[in-house]
Length: 490
Image 1: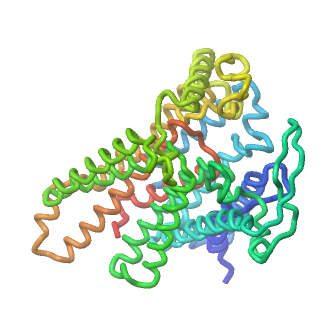
Image 2: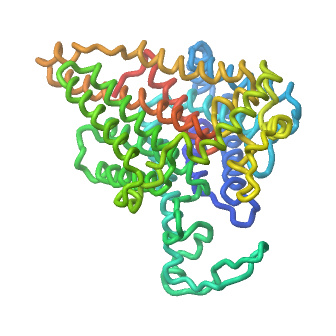
Image 3: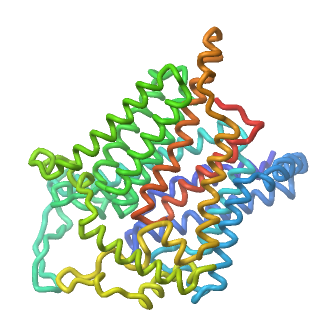
């Protein structure tokens, strides 16, 4: 029998594969194909969802039954309010057309956020079983593995590739692929875009094209793999499926290090400390050991940063992520553009300049310190390179507050549903199964507690793009399911 809801879910399961799309024939190969693919699948999923409502009376009644409590869910309300203010600020911004349609390079704006909202809503409505979430997390990992494989292939093709030297526009020369090479090149030449592993200052790009977002994406992949280990394979940690997850976690951690992104590194450290802290306050028995582990981790990171110029650290693959300093040129560039964002906010404080209109802020409040004649501009200047200041300048104080409200409600619901009880484990020690269930639930809650922290910390020096929005709205929708008082922790 035709089941439109199942077809809609099929398209939703296919959405995570957007990350592997690279369209080398377009001007922006790492961006255009992804948002085109994403919008097509979301539109198809929405169409079949509506067909399901019209053609399946029983299914429609079930969906309507889920819809009624969802529209009262605080997290759904918060996400809806953010999207509404995002669109409203674009309508009242300085360039409504740009705010809604964005541009060919970014593919963001109101239209894209509207599609992410439909993605969020369909997940919340259709994914009512643990198996649904486990499946889409597996699809996220498959997409992430494809991203990692592409990046590795792009680097490997240079091993025996034939290079030619050609002049550049500034009077210099550069080495480029000739189109010929040995067996390794022939095997991986399809991965046409990406740096060689031997390039000075190499950073992993994968199919995302920007190392900063590769690192942030890898953190979410670690979250999905860890969740699956704690839920799907909780009693089979040494089974084949579990070993695949362990291997993927190792791969994503190596990708994370190879991307060498300092903001994401600090985000991962903050999330790890938050994870340990949650566990520490959930278990009196292990508290001192967990607190000690967190302190040791922070101390180790501080020591490594302090001795970042030591020869053995400079020669290591992690030297860049340890090069953290308030006096670094990249940080000074960000401070300069942050000041421009604040100046722009002061001029239009309520709803901002509109999404995708930061260039207007940059032009109007340009600071000459941002341009160094010998080096050019600092960071790319169509964003503030800070999620908080980006939203503050582009969608105003109302937009920023609605955005932060999502995370406030996220944590409110997390602690409301699963309040930390330091004596819970001790009280249930005579019931081994209860203890096992409690410990597993605590680990999952600690994961839920920590993943937004990683995102929020890395966002201090970065801005949101579609690969990050994908994970963000997926986690929000999962939280709607997980924090529902009718759902059971697994």
